[in-house]
Length: 183
Ligand SMILES: [Mg+2]
Ligand SMILES: [Zn+2]
Image (cartoon, rainbow, N blue to C red):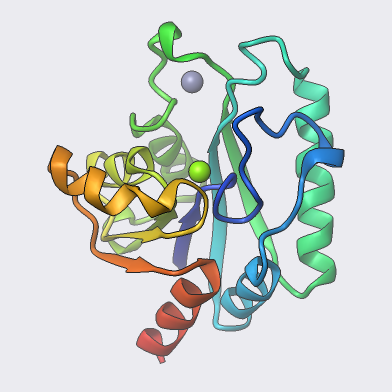
């Protein structure tokens, strides 16, 4: 099983400083639907792992988030892709939960749920937190994309000593690399 863990905001969809609180604010980034379809066609399975403190902040209910994710998954399916699972952290940083990235809790939970060999899995994210969570969970590779927060992230990761294996312009470029590299 070839697993790609994928952050949501800033990788699949456009991020916002005001958060993405519901489906009307959700906008796929250019190429992301194509990227997810490409990954599926090459036998990769995609699991989304996303910090969603909008719930802990009272800006959205779990039901609204579930609705957003159902619609996202349906749009991905219609475009030929597939999201195997979506794990989210509903907490705020002050909660000190084990699941909010950069902590590895969601990756470990996905491992237990799906029997994943994390050492062969890949993380694609737009922030240092994604890369840090990947390292802490022992993922095989951590790819940073320049969309979302990703413009400043490579320098920030270097400064913080967080491992980044490769940097791509966007999810589609990362997907093309994975598909080509895997043959
Ligand atoms: Mg992000
Ligand atoms: Zn959490």
